[in-house]
Image (tube, rainbow, N blue to C red; front, side, top):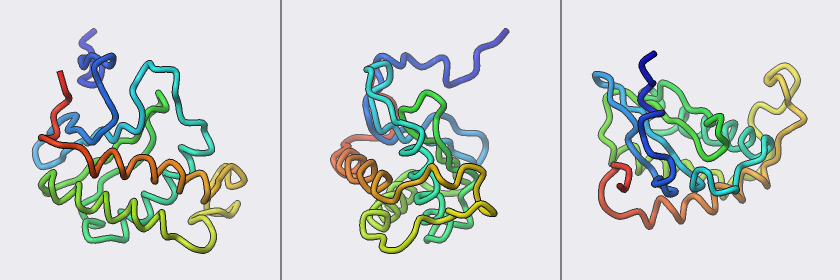
Length: 151
């Protein structure tokens, strides 16, 4: 069976950052790696879930909201996927940084934290989301070069 594109990348060479995983027409899939794969440092479910709620809401309500196809966690617990349509990587990076800053300054309750809105609404924490986003914003701000995986 033919391997899917994400299985063809050497995960032992991936470092935290924002990378283009694939391009399908005008849809770009970004790997938002918050951790080095296979390093023993993985996001717990509550952190992943909390960042998903916060960043998805801020991204979809921000400047690029109409271009966001999907935002969600990687099963390997080392980051998130962000799929956008019709945008340059730099524009997505700028919007991501804006959304990360919004999480850091967020006051009030977690987005989507009721039984009606979420299937695991008690497993959410604004503080956990802020902690993860605080670490990742430093990574994205300091990333130099393009959006290709470092080989």
